[in-house]
Length: 360
Image 1: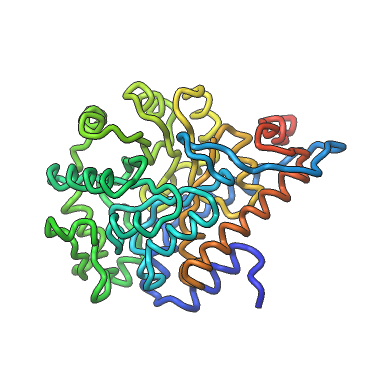
Image 2: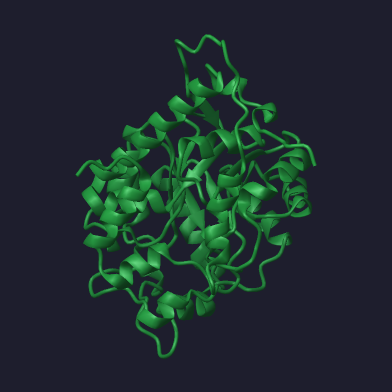
């Protein structure tokens, strides 16, 4: 049966994956209210399209942190790709390159950063968790630099892991043979089954630095010359602090609804954050993007580009690299059609006037 939208990929992935693996990817924290709201908030936004505009030729290309990308859709960092497919993160990176966009590799990957960058045909960013072991963290940064990663994406919304109840029920752990490959040399590669909780929660809560503060951005800047993005911002004042600390980009994100349940939908906080940043750093968004129209709405509200996580995993589970390419190409086609129907021959034509604001 043809897969005509991203929901079709999710359904197909569910059939191919173990319950533990699928639930790990799909679940949110607690009652999963933020998980649902990320998407529902996009649905509530309406597009006030223009007519009688020449859209016979259209372009979707843009730049993000100086990278030329074929569309304003990047691949977000997500952990443990080999739960979906044996080729893991290397396949996802190749697919992103084939689609002409950026792949972001998680610290918690099942494939070493060197192997991923060697396989990649496009830009690779490295998502960074700061471990209590700062030497191990700095070692990760050095490896990412040497391997060829072109930016660091510092995740700041996970001092402890949110309670993902599906993972607790399933006693989530990495199956035999799968490791946190980037941390194996430091002895932090095992995510084992834990009593009465998720093995990943036990790992994160033991290993990650809960004392991380804004001053640590200065430390990070002191140990790398790579561009730095801060991921996990939902407040304008935090976005301003990030800008004041010299970051190159902000990723508006609530961790896909997997951390603090009832936190706001990312697209809901986007306009206030974009206004506060006012062009001093590039603003990206993840969370709930499932349609080309969602991309248009995010751009209209001030995002430079969006990032997608779960959809890439569904594509990987369905058909490896080809499945991820299919997902990205599907989003590209939907975005192209949405731009045409909105009367926008290019991304430069997308502005807030496209969003219908009813009288109150």
